Length: 505
Image (cartoon, rainbow, N blue to C red; front, side, top):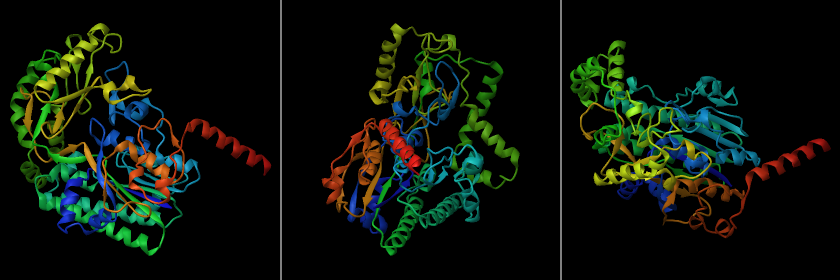
């Protein structure tokens, strides 16, 4: 049995079901009619990193030490890339590789640098080093011979593209990634994992323009149609699983978390008179700059680097928070939807005593509840060896609070926004041999990794938080016993067996 996982970043299952029923997404309709499908509940906060990390490991952020791409370092006010503070997480493809399976990993956002594996790996759009884009290293030349392009990640470029060009370019990038995927599938493989980011990028900008959204879902539908035809032609026994890291919804209302903390007297920001005057003058301009109509106008003169830099500087200006630490009890910056307590003994200039910690968290959570903002203590959501790195309070976006922003200077707690924002319910579809037909299910993002291991007959690490989705199976996979074991012990046993075998040779 071969298993191919297709990640559709930000895919909305409600849109897929509606358009499939209307005959606009025939391939998705086929996959759901002939397979199992439903919501895939993501993590809180619902952002790309750590969502893909949790999906790939089957573990909550507290066990892998990843709460955001950039997060606060322990006993410091500095924010760093999460990898610098943790050991490398064990992804499902690494377990499969260790058990002798040939694997392909392409464009998964949680892979910041490719590493040695039994097969091929191409890092995702957040790759930190061109030299570490691929494993093996010579695969990089093959990629560029295939006209590979990772993604458009420069905000100044994204912001200045016309709508039509923005749409076209993201379809083009998907086509390039698909071309690479087809090349890799020509190789010897047992498991494949490929992520397409097109839907996420488009929904952020065009959520309120359904015709554009539909054209991109149809583009992905055609990609899947082509993929299915190629796989079926080879007459291989292949199971396909489609997943997303989160869902999507409207972004009409944004919560300014630091403005709320300032209003409550929990956050004190240093005032610089000259900058205050500049801010008053620039705030209306910043507001205008964030509107789509201005971005389209800016495109006509985007060849001038100065204007691109102006846009970037003005956009980032309100993201800077000059905090007075000795007068601050709680703060939120560098991440989305998280609050840190300025705890004495933990933070360099902590002001909150340990005995006041729980009471303050309760006051903050109850205060947020009064304005219909959902918030949780970290231990309500996470557990594991990296809890010390976790934010003290985590906020959740929903249909009332669509997004959370750490900027200051607006003088109010809520602002109108535009486009789309993440939602907690993502997409799950499974299709192929031994999969129940037209079966609807609700799953969690942690369930994907253990379910994949079950398909391959590999024992599931006991420290995984997810479960095997046995209800989607029929036949042998439905009857197969779910096995668990301590993976570290098993690794040692395999190394010993390998060593004995080598000595015999």
